[in-house]
Amino acid sequence: MADEFAIDVRGLTKRFDGRTVVDGLTIRVRRGEICGFLGPNGSGKTTTIRMLCGLLDADAGEGTCLGHDIRREARRIKLRVGYMTQRFGLYEDLSIEENLSFVARAYGMPDRRKVVHDALERLGLEGRRAQLAGALSGGWKQRLALAACMLHRPELLLLDEPTAGVDPAARRDFWQHIHALAAQGLTVLVSTHYMDEAERCHRLAYISYGKLLAAGTAEDVIAQAALQTWELRGGQLSEAAALLKRDARWMVVPFGSAVHVSAAQGHDLPGWLAERAPGHAWRVTPIATGLEDVFIALTQHASDHLA
Image (cartoon, rainbow, N blue to C red; front, top):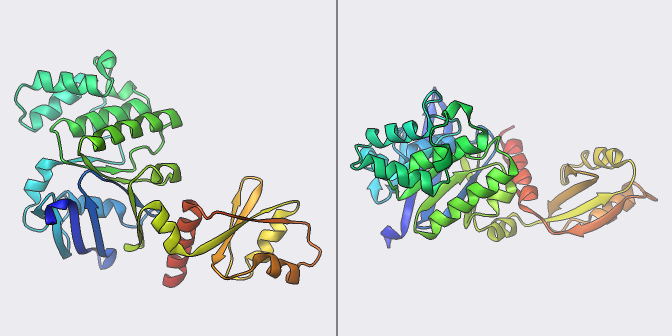
């Protein structure tokens, strides 16, 4: 059933000055789902989001957003989508209430006072309604931006790294709002670099260099990677890391006072170390592969492929 998907696009491609930024991307997001959109900086996430909401024209590809053709019906899509950009985009010399009133007027919404009042209450902004937006902390600016892009009651929310630079408590509160909205039927596509946020999503899509590398639930993505991971502890871990990095099969990442080492399933790290560093004092413990291990491996492999 086509209406099952809020986003259903295939072969989405965008080029700038001859450089392909999004390369044949196919992505589907069910209605009422929170989809985490992940990838390194410059991977094409923002460009994809802007094509989905009608702000950029795709050079190739086809599909629908909220049932509307992304190539021919961009205007209709814009009216039904809320888009929260990476940077705070409201007027810093206006109050919270004035900013929301301005947005409501831009959408031509009737009964603007009630619309703004409801938004202030819904996002806990009532007590700060007269405060200038420029005087707000990052967390409160984020909350105001969310209130603004929800004013016209969109069916799809596109969030581009909405919690960058926001403290952990504000990030937690933000995600509580997002899950509450999704429970009411809103669809959310959210780009993020935080693995704890990725784990809060129903499904994930990971892109690198404009290409989709993995998609599914967190469990699916980890299983698809077919990695095994070990934790190394002990003294002189820098020596262990240097030794391992000489062999391309191992992916080595410092994790606090330990080092995580991942490789394709079937490799034997303890045996490899015993052969190349006999008598070593490092403790090698198998651990569950996490999303961060997978995403670092995906990015590294994509980079190696293009090198």
